[in-house]
Length: 158
Ligand SMILES: [Zn+2]
Ligand SMILES: [Zn+2]
Ligand SMILES: [Zn+2]
Image (tube, rainbow, N blue to C red):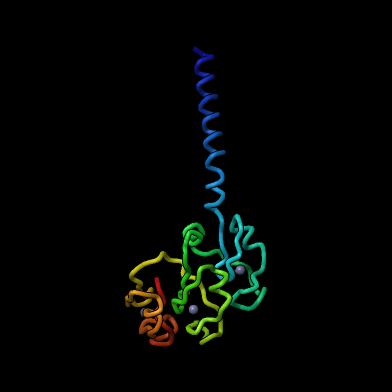
């Protein structure tokens, strides 16, 4: 009896170990994170943010890489859209290599920033709830409830 229960316990442990080993690659790749400014890829947020970012909004290497909202979701996308203007590119690094005409600091004062929400057919402004079918049409208008003041800035996709 004792031997039998010992055996089944070690069998369970072995199965668990095999399960862990099998799922390890997917666990690791699920934790891949991308910098939203430059597209730099790292295996964890701590290793990503250990380094300074060449495309940081405050200036080259003036700050650290910053992870996108949901690394896994973002990494599986076929295209990336700028949350300020809706410009799209096939990678974060190519999107953020260009300056944004609707950047909140002023036209071309900063780079495109990849939208961290999911792809959708319907975008809503996080300040006022205005909705549009694309980021570019949403952000083409100024927002009456912008945090900097009425019509001081554009609608921003939620
Ligand atoms: Zn970066
Ligand atoms: Zn943009
Ligand atoms: Zn708005």
